View 1: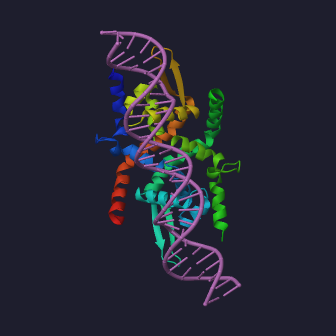
View 2 (view 1 turned 120 degrees about the vertical axis):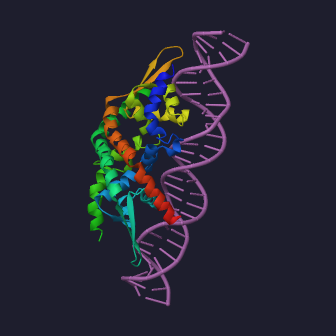
Length: 136
Length: 136
DNA sequence: ATATGTTAGTCTCAAAAAGAGACCAGCACT
DNA sequence: AGTGCTGGTCTCTTTTTGAGACTAACATAT
């Protein structure tokens, strides 16, 4: 009776724990997806896909992000290899953020998802309206 | 001097606040992206793209998710129109979750992103290793 | 000389989200 | 009567996020 589940489990194994067979922390796909699926990553990737930006420019471009989360999200994107951070020794010093090759590569599929969202947000909003009307 | 920023702002406007020009809550793309970019949504979409599952099956399939988050994530996916929830009046009653057409449509681009992650997690992990080594 | 603004952040504290695990009702089987 | 299965909910703790004050070093304006 557990046969079904065991079979399906093997199919999700790649996603869940990877070939290492370890625990979830080692799951490659979850590991990568989570890095880009937080609140601000996709927005900043979208901005930087346009052209490089400086810290203050990004802050003005995305006024809803707190300075703390902008710092942290850029830091995380840089750590994952998507974003390059270059300091120019001007007075006061300026810092420019740009996409790396890896970042541009990742932005391809991410952009597909963003485009889907643009096209289908109407359907999603409608679904929510219906759902909320029914279950109050 | 703000010219640059104003120009770029208009390009991101679709992503930021949508054509409605309202505040961020009305931004269509962020609204949709955030619904699927939480910790468990992509994992459950991956599972349900395979075939419909019952609540308990999903719980066993993804043992790291808490029951509370499984309930909540499925509820949210259902509200957004990606997942259909069907109750069978057996004893004890069983509940089957399956993807809707909208869900399958969204899973297309999401799957592209997941595949990118599978292919490139090595590069990401390497980038992290280098980054951590440098900045300690 | 003194006030003000700019740069890219950090620090602290409050609020929101997520996770762990106990608990529930209804029924079947033993 | 006891055990187990179903699909959840409730409460508590920990983690994550957000709001906003604060910093240092220099430029410009007064």
